[in-house]
Image (tube, rainbow, N blue to C red; front, side):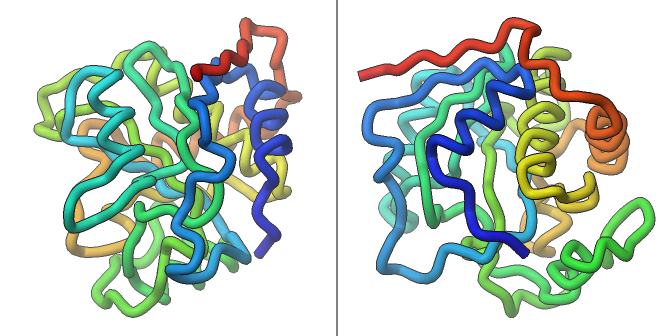
Length: 214
């Protein structure tokens, strides 16, 4: 359980972890305030977009859909490993999921995977940071090494900032039985990568860059 990071603290944590960051104009005040709570936070949920192309994917996640207004995440991780920040605060990314999963994340008391979700009774948008990763989600669209490394670094950055373990990072499909994302890589393997990174020191000297897009 933790108070959500401020926009400045989030950017600082990402850069310290060596993440390439693009700050899109207005992201610091782009959220779903007034439509539910934001915090305390307990972890990070990883998604795939079911889209292709960076500009189109970022635009879709910013705006949302007719039935689901944006932002649809806090950041979009593109195929090159660049992280596009588009939201700060409550975002429409997790939806409802299983309280037993949340409890396992909070207690850090699961082995390779959290308990299988079989109920949708808890507001995940209030409790998790969300990152959409550009991928078609068909099991064939590749996950470049740069993109997987960015997922690892982003997750480690937030975990380090909150003094969480890698077990605070889950896939959307591990939160609810209504989703399949992310498809194409293993969340237990990703948690192993994050755990390994957390055992070391942050290495923001490895080419981190912050750019603002107006």
